[in-house]
Length: 224
Image: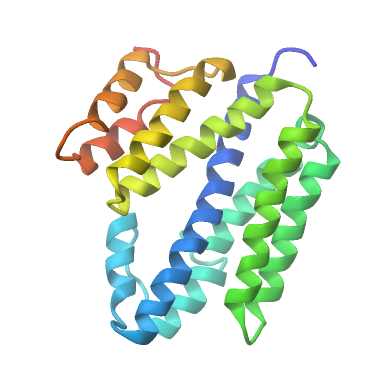
């Protein structure tokens, strides 16, 4: 395969980010769903604040339905899966038909979950297919640069989400190490100074989550 265009590099990067966003937010949603049912029905308001998205939802039932399945909600899991799918379709030649098929299966599972009486089971099938996509991509895509760009997108999205959720600093340190080991192999344009700053931040005794979010979001696309 020849040189990857700037446009397709961007699409591969965001394919990694959107698939990770769908995968991880489904996991988080399942945990929040349990706490909303068992304890605090306004748990979704805390979740919206952590993700910096507007709380447009009228109740926990409204949140569960619209945040998961509404294409009119640009922040919904379904909307992010559609963005992943839109990128994957254009990248069929780069990622291969078999890898693409798992994104299509995830989309089918999402549609089925939306009309199911047990949506959490359906959402689990979405995450299963995304995990299968990542596995197939590793196995089926010959061009290592393509695999690495997708992985960089995944890792940046994961660090961003973990920081927003105030996760254990050890998780952030682990993902930052993985990102550092991967990003040069992707040949993606990034700021070495900002990468060093991310690695510095995750080692601090008091994790500066907000500063880390800002730093990781500005890492790619800037070489200064």
